Length: 127
Image (cartoon, rainbow, N blue to C red; front, top):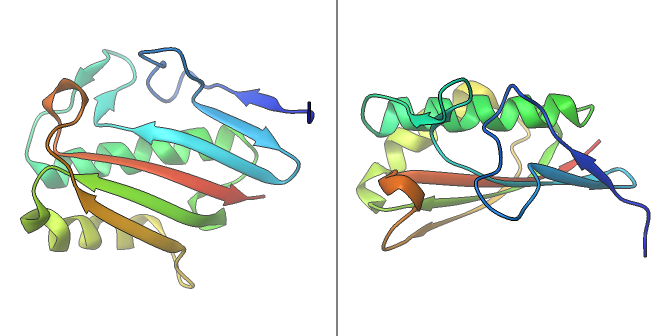
């Protein structure tokens, strides 16, 4: 099996299932999907989709930093929304956390997400 490092940080929510916050193999890091949980309380952040998106990107940034990178090392993002009408608001928040050139991205609408949140984002980094 390829040598892999498990990435974990207390600055992002602990895994709420049988998975790791991220896994690093070589210079590639796969970040698990993050939802709008506040790491210190493991409760969903208060507010609408913008507040949730900010928390999601803060969580992703914390895991990226623990892996030796930043969100600007992202090469691919996968965004899941429970309402595609939130697409523009999420784009605006995302632009606050990433710089050009932006990573590749997919965005899909889903029927539901853990803990009833409106957004989940996963990322792949090249560090």
